[in-house]
Image (cartoon, rainbow, N blue to C red; front, side, top):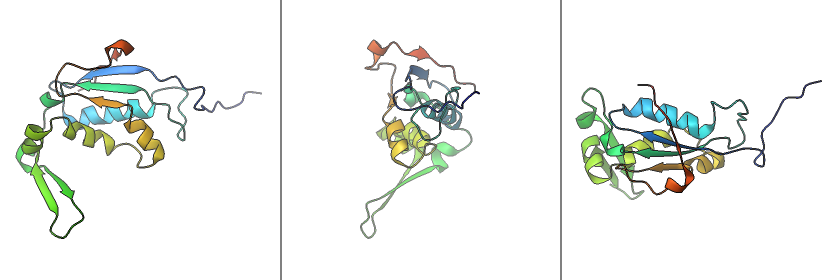
Length: 145
């Protein structure tokens, strides 16, 4: 009799992938990277275990947004004090911290739980083509546009 396989933290193998974000649309990039982080493409996927891989996103400053999103898309942050709402347009966020837009788009697609916190730690976003995880020999992942 065949038993259903359930992955555990001891049996999961975490691979390394690198994604070049040059010229990619933010949302399409984020959905596929979030799927890699969750491990949804693996046959051993188990929803309550961190089955995902480590993902390095390079050239985050070269993403593209469609339509008028550079001027219309707003990023909001509140300091929890009265009148503490801070609002920045997408072009201002890109000029200030180029990796923030990619990180927030991907983080919003991951679970907002302790498991999601583990997945977030497996994401590395860099504004340019230089990255620190060269020793892990990441495999290039092509994002379908």
